[in-house]
Image (cartoon, rainbow, N blue to C red):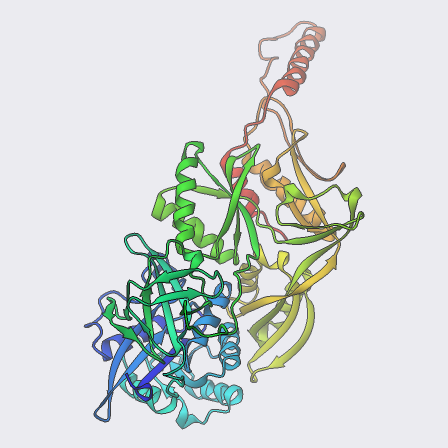
Length: 598
């Protein structure tokens, strides 16, 4: 295929701006599929359709006739959520151009800007597109004005479409060919291919999706992965359709798939470079990173007998999700399970949901935590992401926690609410930029531990749904954090311990003990629920005992008879408290996760 007849492009947009629907219309317009019955053809998971988000990136090859000439359009779809920004960056690196999709009724939002900057860093040609022009609330002029400010785009250069109604789709495909550049690469150089996605197929092993930058790869070639230095033989390769189309070779500028008897997704990592084992290229393509988990949580089966199934299921899930990391863990309260690392809270939610749907295993997750760097007085250093591993404060010199660069885009009406919320979460304001007369971009540096719990929910609440959030890792900073233990009747419950800033310890501790007092049923003896830092109790709630009316049978007589019965009951309660154990229901662990952490 001639390079000048190829266009590799992606669509960048904020969640729910119509990216997957636009992809559907492209597939219909280029006859890849007939009239789409199921919306979001490229979103293959039920979860993706329900949540209206793309979780796994996808790619599809389309043929579009322009002025009598057939052009190949490779649409490399990308996830939209901040948790998957590395996957987005690799998908962008595989393209020469990007459609910047903006909702006419909502304008540019935080993740639109974030992904736009990523596209610009990869030197992509940007084609601005305004979607949902048929909506009654559509403010087309306002969206044009915003795109003009951000990109310097002229109104005539901006495509206007309605993905749902199918308006302007053919004209947009023509613009893709006119305005986006063809790939440039050296056909006679050693092959160099970028892995922009990989997934596990039960029957064929790992399927690797690649973009060829130089040279060509043929069936039967022996290839090498740069990151793992492993070698494989290509069993099959070809082009990406809804069904794969096998070819003898894929050449410079093309996107395609490779099957080479690879056993684990971890051996074909997103961002890695593929070349020939002998006579291949000398240097890998830039930008490869190991996935870095940001949020850690323990995962335990609700029913203890599901543990063996959980072991098998998490191994299968890992085959399709290379960014999930896990190791075995046991808890006195919850039994056997796993300590897992996730890219973010959405990633954690998706893993929990997939466990239930795909493997029918209901699980409980412990309070999420982040990685802390702990420097001890003897000069050694620890990385702690589990409160159980937190050392005794006596040995600690100082602790560092991760800070994030955070961008919040909101209408001007809610600036005060957002500033108060960010301040409460220890945010440090860096600057304010007015995007237009109605909307403003607030930049904060904020600790990750403050973001992961319910910051996004609170943000949506205080802005009535108008605010959008984007964040990425900045650095580790020295911080005054402590480990808070939860004690039930004087016994520590390891699964409920958490790490937080000293200033928040009392509030969070009180919130957890109050929540527990509502969900743990009353026993025949009084139960003390306490939050402590080391030996110091910082918060307490009490569940009063159920009390039998032992005086019911006393219908008169001397008071000493009543006193005797009450003293006997008191002794019984005391003895019961010493030997009795508190039954903590599973709902209590779930309630701790939802405890308000203001």
